[in-house]
Length: 188
Image 1 (tube, rainbow, N blue to C red):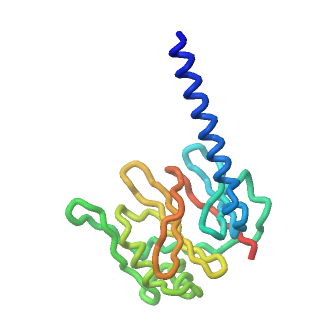
Image 2: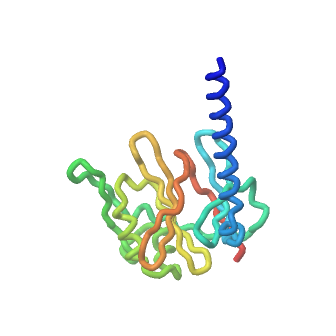
Image 3: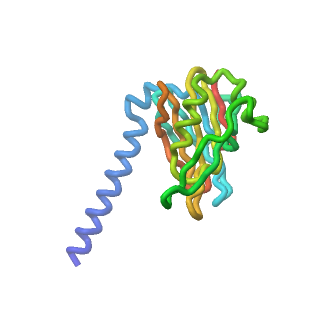
């Protein structure tokens, strides 16, 4: 009986310590000194709830209860029609099939007419992601470019957020299956 009580106490202590660690990480000086550049509004289609995430200028993301900070909506460019998936050696690969003037998709034309730099390099790097590209959204906040990609992976569709900086696509956050970014608000 004493062993069960000791084991239970050890697990309870580990749980409390892990929660304290998570809270301290969210309130770390690095996160507190970083300012928010955007609020991301996402909907999870599995539980039909809205979630809000604060995108900090250091590239980190914090969960927030709601958007009561920013009101300016950012334009999101949907460019998933630029890609075609195919199978190569039992792996799903993507190729860039449409660029700028040869696109008939109005969203892609808006993207190519935007002030986002290195568009071809950005799209070429997105094409290197393995798995079928389900949704590809590009958005710009001030001078920074972000990409949200939803992948078609068997019966799930994970959503990942990347930043395109210095010609490189860098992963920032993975959202739970079924999470769709609906709106992005900025303080611009």
